[in-house]
Length: 391
Image (tube, rainbow, N blue to C red; front, top):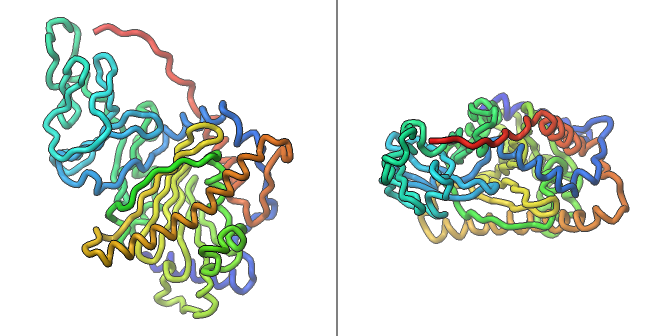
């Protein structure tokens, strides 16, 4: 871990404790209710999310060469295959002949070939087209250009990140994740963690309501009074921006009690770090592990949440498994409080009570997120026109 990073967090935490004030903007802001209930807005947001790197799976889910995973994030049929050199390749799981899904959802360990169930076009693990039955009927087919369409993919922080839209301008995911990912990977156990306790669940709320909540600590004392509120100072969170991304630091109540020295300061002992990767991924860093969540909009009022626990190593004993399961349970019980509140807000949005939602000066990071999201939406290129081709 970078000592300058730790020292700076110590300095700013100390200042926040002395003043009783965390990071704030002089204005705060407002967000129109229409941004949370518009189906047209959600359709455009889905297009945008597919153009940004998504943390679709843990690296340990396909651990060895030949291992593969077929899944459908954001309604995109996706095939992940670990190659003989150890790299992970991501493909659109769509046959280049007539568009059938090549591999059913699931996973395997020894991929030798992938055969389309419609006409038996056959693809190698590297995506190249190997065989075409009755190939004489395709005189203009160029096999070298007819492999499974490859997507930009990279492994960082024990996670496989994929850009799901092949037309996205983001091709270099490492550069996009940037210094914030480097900082995350510098923390003990989070360079190549093991994925654990994965689950997906659906919530009746707009995905941005769930995102808003991570950008402020104002709600903690009330919303989490039954779970973790006692562990943290009231409404004291530090915010660092990394272009579109954020790093947030929620100061624990033990900080003023123990008054740690700057020398050797361990941020994970005295606060929770949250790494937010624009637009929809959050990684909560706790003292000995991490919790990743990413949000998949299903409609303007419904969101699928994907969770992956990131452990330093696979639990080797029942005692270790029980320890990690207890941590996962507390995390889920705490987030359930946020999900219930988000559903409550969503249910009232169309009532006409509010034209906009209001954010305080210390909640400024939420309306700033909405401004940045809108700017990205406005920069979206029109969907490419479809035209027939011949083989």
